[in-house]
Length: 234
Image 1: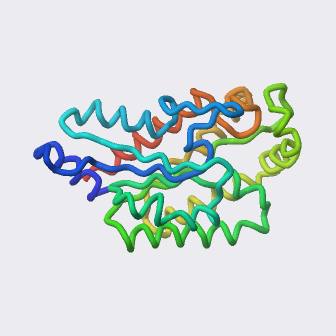
Image 2: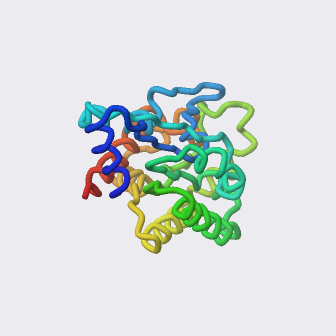
């Protein structure tokens, strides 16, 4: 995180320098989708991270570009990498995929790994940005009254992916790529697993009953991202 924190110090010393730029690159969770057709741009995890940074670096200024797209996966996101990440000239990129990718099941793991690795390599080659990877939160483990009628057709597949450990294996791919490329990791999935092991019904944290964390889930993600950012300060 040398570049990111150097930019913070640069902006803090000289207000004329460019704003410290963060790009949050991901799917509907990153976009801030809560329930059907409801966006919450103030509670989404990366907005909370920016607010935390502003609190401890009051003389710097930050701008976060929300590059979350509902329904997106790594393969599709690579097609918009130039538009939504590289062209933004970021100082930090938060990469959060896996939920939609996992719907391809175990046969999709190799494609997911290759695409995520390509994403990391391209960002490093084309920008000075530091990168943090995020593992996904849990998805639903059982049916719920909160599931919108338009989404009932995908409910069984999502529950199966979560309950059979397929999503965990996608999280494992993200962990492996973080180790391979020496990238900080906010292991959100691990924290959801810890909560489940402690007896929490994690489905109650899914505001749409399927795969969108509520405000508690976004606070948890923000805490983990912020904690790991500070842990990487040079």
